[in-house]
Image (cartoon, rainbow, N blue to C red; front, side, top):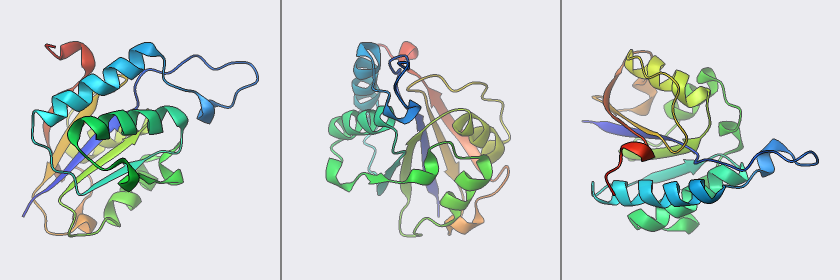
Amino acid sequence: MTKNLYLLRHAEAQEKQADQKDIERKLNPIGLQNSSRMGINLSHKDLSLDMLLCSPAVRAKETAVLVAEQIGYDTNRIHINPDIYEASVRIMLQLLNQLKNEWHNVLFIGHNPSFSYLSEYLTGEEIGFLSTCGIVHVRFDIVEWSQVSQATGHLIAYEYPSMLNF
């Protein structure tokens, strides 16, 4: 049995304004475009998601909606999880370990540095700094999400907008 985890860092956001909270930052025009492009890229892979979990940050939610629209995922099924915002690797691992076992394909949309660190922790591969709107696909040869731990995943792909050919 396999499980597929997709970690997508939110797309490029506007600079924080003096009176603005970080969580309120919206996508900038490049971020809006790249979110749609990444969604189109994922749609070409016939990705069939069981669950899309997203940070409550505005930029992450905007990324999630644009990607979901492109892959045909019902935007009303996007689950906002406040634990994803500013999560440590430990918190992200707890979230993974608690996923429903009937879910085989799960997409998280959130932030660095936790997504970069988590990708490396799960795969044992050097990923480096996950670019904005970059996505990491990790496959696990497991039955239950509770079996996910350090170096139990296989890095299948790391893609980001500037490498897309459209």
